[in-house]
Length: 345
Image (tube, rainbow, N blue to C red; front, side, top):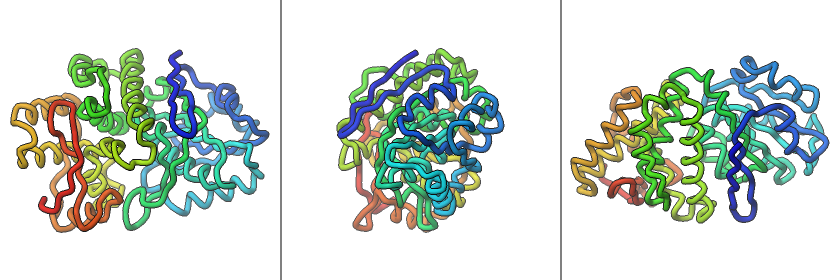
């Protein structure tokens, strides 16, 4: 078992690797009652494993997909919390991917002005990124994650066995965030040489070797923690975690969150960022070629170009942009990035 302690002001919490059981999850719930928000697919696949939860807390089954991260389901979760009679000492438990974690987390952030949140990520994307750092949100017709709050979990419990039942599309959506960490590592202050780790272990990663996946997730979490501990609410350094997200979010909005997963869109956004950085002379051709070769090892889907006028409008509406300019995180060297405000893309 690996235990990573995240020390974020004003709260610290453990990230625990190992087999996850209902008993272990409930051991972090100090109150008398809990509400478990569980991904529909996870519930069907692991009903027997999670069945003790049904005897101990109310269960809310959330359909899968980014489109489910909406106000309608947000209200349903809050209604379930009130019907259950959760108090300020009770907890909401999120079991699933990023959508379940973000939505349940936002409900926990506002219910009685904040109650405990326990994150149990079951996708690679949620393990390496969304379950850690305290960002919670819902999507709107105007853009992704525009309504949300920072609410740190009480604990994050990671079991790589959940990843064995992910389909290839969902597994690769997590790899979109993984390669992001490789390209920002030096800016995070890391010395794990994640780029080399990915190059050397790409086949084992795609085979979902549990030992390699555990190492990979731990590295990504430590890189994110190094950033979030210095900038919890994205006032400066934390912006580097958005490499690939400006263009990626525009893809998701353009396709109504239905055609491509978040990680697929982020991977396309990273490629766009490298292309833009090369055009602006921020990196040389060798690094651009190297980055493209690394990403090709993981077989990300090809996403066509969309009308520039609409994409620019989407990007200008992104919460990271201001003053009519688009904020991009762009590579400036091997594993290094910087933020740029750009109006000519």
